[in-house]
Structure formats: C-alpha cells, structure tokens
Amino acid sequence: MATVKALAQSPNLKSRPSDFAHLKDQEKSIETNLEVNNIIPVIDVSLLSSTNPDDRAKAIHDLGKACEEWGSFMVVNHEIPEMLTNQLFDACNEFFNLSEEEKHQFDKIKNNMRFPMMVGSGFAGSNPANGKGLWRDYMRCYVHPEFSCPDKPKQLK
Image: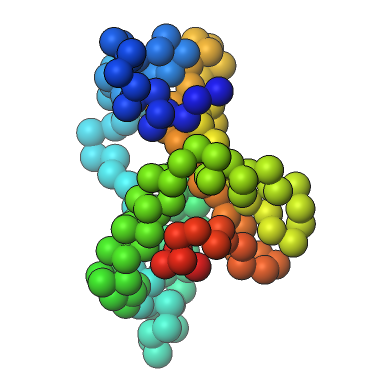
C-alpha cells in the first residue's frame, strides 16, 4: 500500500481515496459527542515537583482524571525549550521526506525487540462502522525498555 504522502503527491490523484476518512466526514458526530464546556484537559507538570503537597496531589489527580476520561491531555510548563521541539518537528519532517524504501527499511525490523519501530499509513483509529481509515502516515518508536529510533535522519536520534 502506498503511503498517504505518496498518494497526496501523486499527479494521478484526483480525489481522496474512499477508504480514508477526512475530518469533515466526522465533524457532525464529533460535535454531537462534545458538550459545550468540554475542552481537552491541561496539565501543569511544574506542579508535580512543587514543594506544596496539595499542588502535587492536585496535579496527580488531574493527570489521572485526564487519562481516564479523555485518554490524552495537553502539557504546560514542561520546561522543554521551544528550540528543541522545533528541531524535533524538523527531524520528523525530514524522516517523512525520505524515500519510501528508506522509511520502510525500519518497518521491516519492527518485530526485532532490539529495535522495535513501526512505520506505516493509516488505518489506526479506523471507524469499524464505516470502514474508514485516518488520512495519515506514522512512525512509532518505542522508548522502553530501550530508546529506539531510526538512524536517518541523524537529527532524530
């Protein structure tokens, strides 16, 4: 199967392939599932190292609640420099600009426990009711028990 990036850049592509969903297809169901005041939880991770035990307890409670109710959350006050996050995004873009062969050489070793990694295109998060997949390419690197990462591009490591 061709990657989403390859499909999107193909001169022969005239419309979205029918087996991929597009957010517009799902907007109505998303809107009906969200309550008016429902926003993604924001976790202030600086409170986890606070000297005030009440602040720490609140952060832990909020983190647990976000995981249980949403499955995700936004992190603030993490102290990761913006320059580092920008470099990470640049390195990921470089990875996805590699040739299909270069990207998928890493996917071929995904079952090797010394280097667990997956590269692919999108049916994760698919909707079984309509058989639609997400319009995305992905790279998944496991970081436990060991950090695993492709050797290209070098900046990603």
